[in-house]
Length: 148
Image 1 (cartoon, one colour):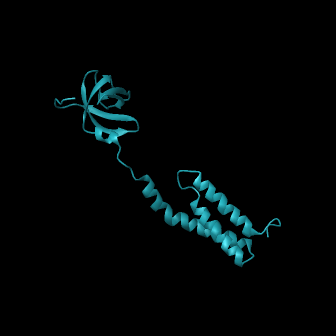
Image 2 (tube, helix red, strand yellow):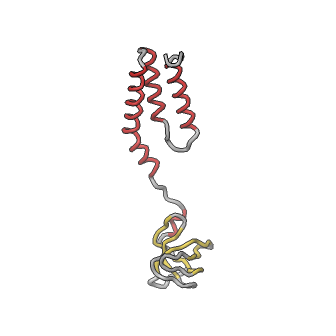
Image 3 (cartoon, rainbow, N blue to C red):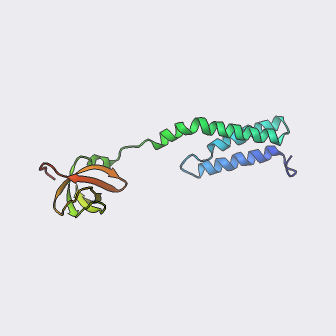
């Protein structure tokens, strides 16, 4: 008993609270604590020891976090290709001058993009898209004539 309330009810309430918190987010933030609270709840049904229940909560939550977080993180952080990735390697036309450390803009396939380059690029100059960083295209000078 804790504050004249059975710890079973407290662990049940915490399990529900952690579940609601998990459902309210788009990422995994408290699923491990749900498991810990359920483990402590089960122990509270058999033993009347708050210390043992706390140990079970910490051990189960920690074990769940330690063993499942790397697996979950790998699945969640796996990058998925986007339509913008199809621009890599294509030719764009500079519509606003680009200098090292000073972004400009390029036009490709009818859209204007923020662009960066470590070489100066002048308006009207074709450039090749090397990669995408955030919302900016990383461009380089065009070495050979290519059609837009």
